[in-house]
Amino acid sequence: MNPGDEQGYDTDERYGGTGQTRTRLPGDEDTYDTARRSMRPSRSLITVVGVVVLLIAAIAFANQNTDTPDNPSDARGPAASPTSPTGTAPVDTSTSGIPTGHPQTKQGAESAAANYTVVMGSPEMFEAERRGTIVDALYDIDAERAKQLDKAYSSPELLSRIGLTTEGKAPDGQTFVSRFVPVGTKVEKFGSDQATVAVWYSSLFGLAGENSRNPVTESWYTTTYQLKWQGDWKIADWEQVDGPVPVRGDQKASSADDMAESVTSFGGFTYAR
Image (cartoon, rainbow, N blue to C red; front, side, top):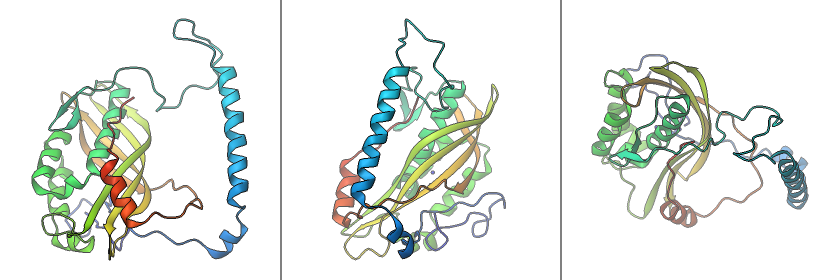
């Protein structure tokens, strides 16, 4: 499930794609511009301003949200964003460790799209056996895109480019990092048996370890899924684009060891409203 031209791949040009959707793995990002960096305020100033903004926001929130579930207020202001929590219980079932059983509702379609993004961005997609299980669980059985995935992910050219073995494993002494973190979802179209849902997410991708030629980098993407209802929401097709990309902060990048330790000790999440 998301990539730059140097380290990525394109299902259309290299793997007989449909000519509609470009699929890439996270690649290198531009370095800081020296002039822009010199114009930035100091970190201490940014911290002070950030604290003040948070305090103002907290006060405003406390003053506005005085209603309770038993005493709702009609003066809440603008409607909640599409991914605000609703209080509805999330999915509590899974198939081979993959969240399943999403309801046939807008919220269910959003949760399915977010969950599927997480799974599609996992290292398991590079392991042939596990990839087959994932595709069977997530995709419409007639989806042409599902048929393209195995060929794309198992390509020796791709695996070599990102530094993995032909079995999709990291070299000795290195840790393969591939994790997608959804930030929000948006329902663009919805019907009883079809839905179009966009997922905005951050991607961590690369090899953490000494002498890695592909260090872990962060990228931002939006993937729009065409979903069909088949007892659960299934992916019929999808399209990925870059961004929106936030301005990078002044935090120092962590060491390869810290990154490898963190990605193995901090587990991922199941996403549902």
